[in-house]
Image (cartoon, rainbow, N blue to C red):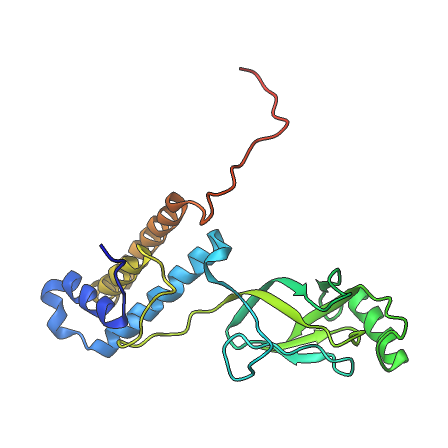
Length: 239
């Protein structure tokens, strides 16, 4: 049996099935809004418990494609992050001779960032001896990746990051929300229709139970990698 393809319309149909007698009285646009609210809830829980679900990596060859992040320039310290980036998990440098370069996050007002920034301002450019192997960076505004100092070379880096999930339409294929989490979206939307407008407090209680069931579902599924066995080391105790 083939893996089922889930689309926005699939979720709308499933939600209407769960609504039963309520289905004819609910506008499809409203249902789609509720499904996207559920998508945000699923994203939040799965990100919290399993970061790898929505991790992607940047590319620097096609500026018009998704996940673009440019090669670092020796004359620039500020770069625009990919639009869907929500949190950077790891930064990898691929430039020959600079593979060991580290990028360390620091707040704008941290002593480390300020000191490195001031030294770079005084030098008015990168370290001429190419001795730098650690760069502090911060994230300013909604999408600015800001280095404290100028890169020593044109560094090709890859951002490994957690991405946001955009709202979907009925015609879109929903392949980011993995089975069986897609069913939880329809369950949320149906209950939102039946309870939220009639008894908001009851919906709040149900939503808490729904979120707990979602957490249990994520935890019961386990990790996405079972290839490497885990061993408990140096355990001593009473038998």
